[in-house]
Length: 103
Image 1 (tube, rainbow, N blue to C red):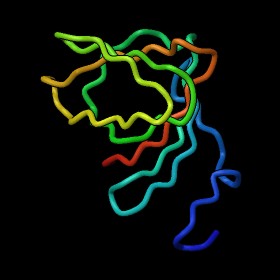
Image 2: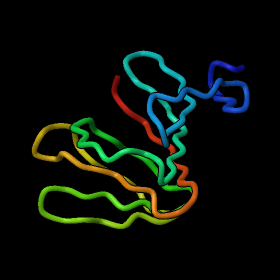
Image 3: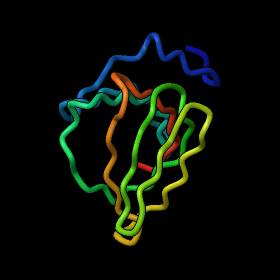
Image 4: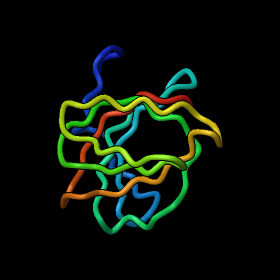
């Protein structure tokens, strides 16, 4: 792998919970993450920040005061913190998203 190119095909899948698998390159306090969600993901509140781009599928994210539908081509910009807590739900068989995140 080049120091400047991420070859996702060479990275191993991680499965941190049912309904979510990911491939991530972690370096310098950041990670570039390819995430795949399915409807099998159990509902849970998340307070982490997420900045990314929807590649495939439809994903619904519930916040305390609204619910937003994300489709391919949409950007995702969720700051970290309790005031931005959110709960995601895959509406299609597979949702693929690329994220750049702090770790």
